[in-house]
Length: 264
Image 1: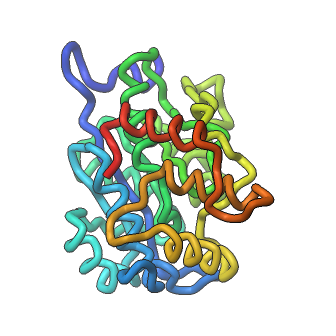
Image 2: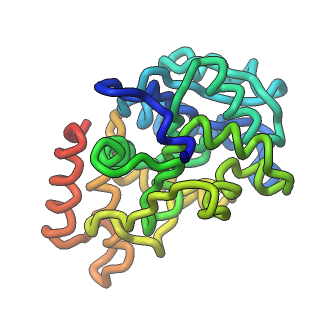
């Protein structure tokens, strides 16, 4: 029996936590979580978007050296703060699952200030209509927009069995590298949101500058609807210039966002 099959129960949704990993020890872009973005910090913008996703608990999971400075961000965005290992992020997620009694974890990362909260909601909706999976994520999104939905029991098994450093640092590789052990659900993203060549994560100074431009063009004090971000990204590939997109692209993404609970 796969680990996911034991989550929840008849007529009851599994207890779900949205857990965001973030710390200040990045080597390529030090202290990026506290870089200014949209009148707040990058971490603020990540949490503001993810707070729109329905979950039993929202958690910011960090390490000891980062906790004091990230705690105020978590508090003002309504997230619980959890402190765990710096490099063994898999163990950090397992600690969160145990601390908050989670049966499944919606995993997000703190370097994605344009994460698609509407798509996270769609992923949760999908989990109610397909056979239980240990790991689920949409494929073909812009880098930096996706989340992963993982059964806590699968995380615990990975914690016990994974030995390679990348498996511990990046949390889920052990799961999707072992389809013989885990049930995987990795559908292509819906057409309006399928844009694998785009990138909106913040890993380098150049990434940060690109995201600053997007916020400068689109941000008005509330989380930017994902449909507008896609319109902008498609416009970057349009000879007419940034922000130009076909009406069908924008309408399609907006329709899907509405199905996931509406635009913010």
